[in-house]
Amino acid sequence: MGDARLERLDCIPAFETKFEDKALMDTAEQLSVLQINVGKRCNLACKHCHVEAGPNRTEVMSREVMEACLRLLDENSFETVDITGGAPELNPHFRWFVGECAKRCSHVIVRTNLIILLEEGYTDLPGFYRDHRVNVVCSLPHYTAKSTDRMRGDQVFRRSIEAIKRLNAVGYGKDPGLVLNLVHNPGGAFLPPSQTAMEAEYKEHLLREYGVVFNHLFTITNNPIGRFGAFLERSGNLEDYMLKLHGAFNAGTLEGMMCRFQVSVGWDGRLYNCDFNQAADVPAAGGATIFDWTGKPIAKHKIRFGKHCYACTAGQGSSCGGATERV
Image (cartoon, rainbow, N blue to C red; front, side, top):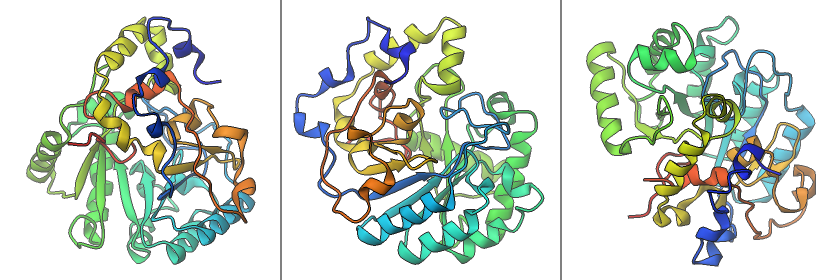
């Protein structure tokens, strides 16, 4: 399994060949992050979306699967619950689920596209997030309207700034306990710049031009799967992009790869080593589901890789939490 477009590229060696320390091909003894994709439905259809979320997607996590996630959380010492989508807020059980996760874990992340916070029926969410002390991670591919709208749609940047202002108004980015992080994605087939430098640019520009603040910026390399992978193939740039990622391989990122420390739960309960593996249909070893893991200790296990993993190890590295390079 995996993205067939990438696996056909004979010029790119299998990712497994990059490991001198074979121990890094296993998960850590203790997983720290439970990442949960509660559905692929979204009010946007962004060009770089690796899960190909959009308004016409019907995949939505059931309450039964959510309850199994809560059992797994009860039985293990996860430090973080990371709730994603699609637009996770569109799941009909979203508020209940966030509340239950917050009772069990002090660090709950919700990944929002920002625009949903302006939609009818969702405008209360900044206050809801504040009340549950949720760590909010927001997609804002660039600090200019032209670049962001090119990737995410007309007027998305303007509306994103309005949503950030609403989050700022309830304390996000200002109160030390209300963390607001932004995510930068490159606008094309190239690597992101230095995360530290880009964060400084974002903070200076967004404060000066719009009066908004945030805590940290995560730079995430566009993964050559999903909608972005299809674009690369259509434009004849897939092989060149993969050669670029392979050429920029950084062994210093292997130790911090997110797949070593987390399990990713799909909307239907299937388990993966990370969100990108989920999008590429590379399930965790044994094809386990969330129901197979409840009621027993989580064992250290082999991570499954594909050629899309080069995106996570190019340059400074890339993960759902930004750069991964160990320096």
